[in-house]
Amino acid sequence: MTRDDANTLPTDGSETVIDLALPGRSYDIVIGENLIASAGERLAAKLSGARFAVVSDSNVAPLHLGPLKAGLEQHGTFLGAAVVAPGEASKSFPVLAKLSETLLDLGVERGDCVIAFGGGVVGDLAGFAASVLRRGVRVVQIPTSLLAQVDSSLGGKTGIDTKQGKNLIGTFHQPSLVLTDISVLSTLSEREFRAGYAEVAKYGLLGDAPFFVLLEKNWADIFAGQDEKRRQAVETSARAKAEIVVADELEESGKRALLNLGHTFGHALEAFAGFSDRLLHGEAIAIGMRLAFTYSVERGLCPAEDATRVEQHFAAVGLPTEIDAIPGGKPTTGELLRLMAQDKKVQGGKLALVLVRRIGEAFVEEDVAMEPLTEFLKRESAGR
Ligand code: GLY
Image (cartoon, rainbow, N blue to C red):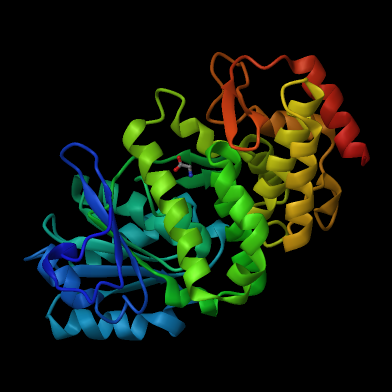
């Protein structure tokens, strides 16, 4: 839905507003350019009476905190900023504890609001802190990475990692508003943009074959920063995510689980690489999605040419597709299976996997047979 009355402030019509229509907790995802500078005004109108504490990281804050802070100060609503170290390692109990105390020291009260201003790590961490601070304060997501804009800032999942795996401690805490400023994407490194693009491609692969065709045609423009194409990619992804979240907010019916295409393999690879720069989340799930397609082909579920297209597209954009591509060594099959067993979809010790019937049609396979999967992973780990 496109509206021109977003959040009670007049716009010039250049913004798109997607209504994430959860009963009683509806919120807008506003997508446009140069939104950060006007965020203070918009937030004062939208969350009247609230004051704002910004959580960011030391990559994003020097680049973008200035205009956000100035806008909030202008409206007398800035409580302060807490800046964490960039990277997955910040999604930890020690960082959560320190951040929560900093937010209390800044004076965040029940009626105030935390702004998660950064990529996926900041969104998950700040969202989690907000959900438990004083038994829950509001959060606004202002995502600055492609990955956060198309996936992690939307739908209310928050969390931190433990040594057992990724996102195993967390909450559902829907934001009050998401401000998606696509202008900031131009400050991302190419590697980070590419990793986020894996999540964009995911929406085509799991449920929208024409979108995947569009990406096959337009990816070079999207990477080159062609604003309209970028915006179309972000909008289509955000709409797809919103639709899935509305259908299955708490991941109960299996619909939201489709968003985990490539993630059971991918999270295990990320855990093996120590959630470090060795393998970014998007890189891990690109390998994971390719594995999900190849495994689906091997099981006679999916045409081989679809797996080939996925592999070729990822290779074209420069995303990894092989377990071998992890710099500094790869996991043994045993390690991989042990790490996959930590997946949140495991029930009664049984693994579930998101598999595919074709590009654009994913499904959840419950109670995965371990023998063929183990044989498959042995072959993949040995290198194809
Ligand atoms: N990123 C997966 C989800 O939000 O469900």
